[in-house]
Length: 189
Image 1 (cartoon, helix red, strand yellow):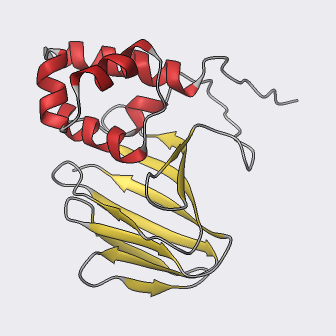
Image 2 (image 1 turned 90 degrees about the vertical axis):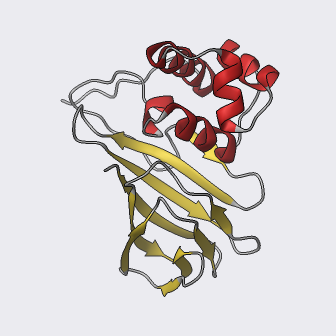
């Protein structure tokens, strides 16, 4: 019988430990990482101490500044068999839209890909700044309808539709129907 192992660390604690680890690995000061990410040094200090509630935009900026896959911020060590039920998993919300990303799996070393469940509601599109160079995003829409892809030429997707596009250029995910959700795979070059 399979067992469901869950971690007891909060998402903020996992992010804090990951930021400290990756900044140390890169040999960068708080000031240097904050400057590269375009955030206040005090914000980074709060995040590394486990306080604060970072937005998706702030976390992506930090990943670009540290030249690292997004999943390294959210993915603590896990067992060989992992089950994440619908509605569970580490969730990060966007600042300006009803868009949430739940990390489902990160790439094993040297695989460099992450898997997310995306939930979004109509209203404000999720416009993403470019990620680290070489990133390709793959989206498979499960339910609803959405405009997805390069910001200058998004494509309307329906259930079962798939798109791949450069994630190292500005891109968008805009839900057109309530309850829209998709699977997102981010492939790092």
